[in-house]
Length: 79
Image (tube, rainbow, N blue to C red; front, side, top):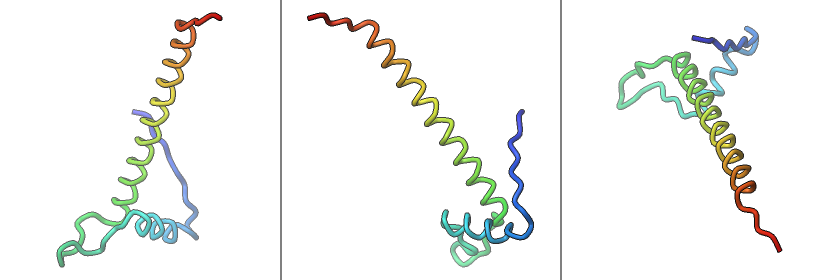
């Protein structure tokens, strides 16, 4: 399996972690209990979900472009 690695400088790592958690609605507690998913686990999951959504969207664009090219070639309407 291929890996994609992101390096965040130590000086801003906590800031980035907190920003991702805030943006995506991380909760320290769920129903009065500590969240079993840490901020780091949550952030990694959100990054994976984002990359997956980019891949799906990208493949959709490729499919659309292929269909458009095919249709343009097949639907030759002359004056």
